[in-house]
Amino acid sequence: MRTIPIITARERTESKVICRQHVFSAVLAPMREQLLAGGGIVFTDSNVVRLYQRQISRALEGVPVFVMEAGEENKNETTLFALLRAMAEAGLRRNSTLIALGGGVVGDLGGLAASLYMRGISCIQIPTTLLAQVDSSVGGKTAVDFCGVKNLVGAFKQPAYVYVDRVFLKTLPRRELRCGLGEIIKHGALSRPLFEKLTSAPDLFDLGFLAEIVPENICVKAGIVPKDPLEKGLRRCLNLGHTTGHAIELSSGLSHGECVLWGLLFESGLAARHFEADARFLQDLKTLCFSALESRERPTLDLTQALRDKKNMAAGEVTLTVPVALERYEILRLSYAEYERELREVGKRLC
Ligand SMILES: NC(=O)c1ccc[n+]([C@@H]2O[C@H](COP(=O)([O-])OP(=O)(O)OC[C@H]3O[C@@H](n4cnc5c(N)ncnc54)[C@H](O)[C@@H]3O)[C@@H](O)[C@H]2O)c1
Ligand SMILES: [Zn+2]
Image (cartoon, rainbow, N blue to C red; front, side, top):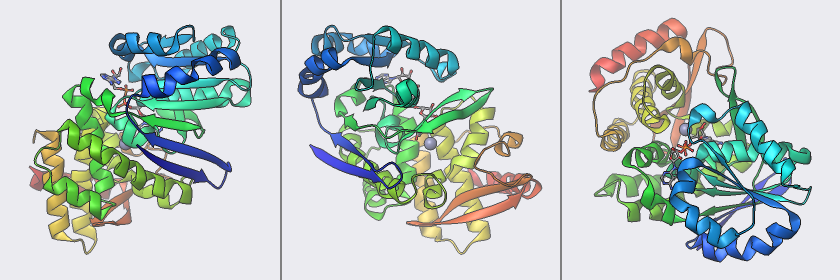
């Protein structure tokens, strides 16, 4: 068991990520009385409830459970208000707790509902996907997609606790593991010890290996977030691969993690063209990304979407955070025309 404290200067609240096993019997079951007395709700999705119904009922009998239909397409205001309604109907009060049990979609929606209900109630995150364990459940960002724009409406809401249990990895399809690997490799580019583990791993998809490196990934993100809780500067390094990744995501059928992997590949190529980059590191990063992708089929890119990325502040210009060496990144600003031309060039040499 490992506890990682996260303190944010802004909210003066402490959030703890606890990596431990037996979350149903050792964490949730002992909370049942308190949840029944103080009011509490479990928020999850249709896939998670299908897989873990027995454990949920056994640990939390009598506690209301609200189940959303799984999928990013349901991370919207309709589900948000349906959840808020369920919270009101369950009689939740100011001292009640929402337990978000699921992947990043459940975590983002649940966190936002907890931040809105009675101007904020306590939230516990139990991330069940690899991506949610290493990324989305840490850092306090919550949101729903709105008016066709991803994460347009959201809030910063630190969960009181995040419980990370490796048991959930066992039921994840390989594609969901790959999704988490996108963020894990991104973290690796920011942390030497993690990068060394990744480059020497015989099988990136091995569940034992992944469970071992989850806490280290949380530490990478947890080390960055408190220094920049509102995403004004330093936290930008967590955007490695993401600007190009988002453009790919909006124009291909690939998952977020797959797009981040392609984004890292493209943006490494841009780094090599614009900065004095460490060629050996970029080669190792490329090898890692292709091992996680298990495919060299290049996705389509619709660059008009990249310019809509809300992190690109200046109109007509694309701002990217690119990896230049292990634990080092640079900010690269390109006009739209340059970005398009350069990506085409990089793409030719990529596969
Ligand atoms: N808040 C943040 O800082 C942050 C960071 C990164 C991503 N995100 C958000 O996270 C979301 C993506 O998260 P995700 O990849 O976890 O997606 P997701 O929540 O949709 O989960 C992916 C799929 O896995 C299923 N699933 C969940 N747990 C499972 C388990 N243990 N076994 C089998 N199936 C399981 C889900 O039902 C879903 O079908 C996006 O909406 C993204 O915007 C947020
Ligand atoms: Zn991401």
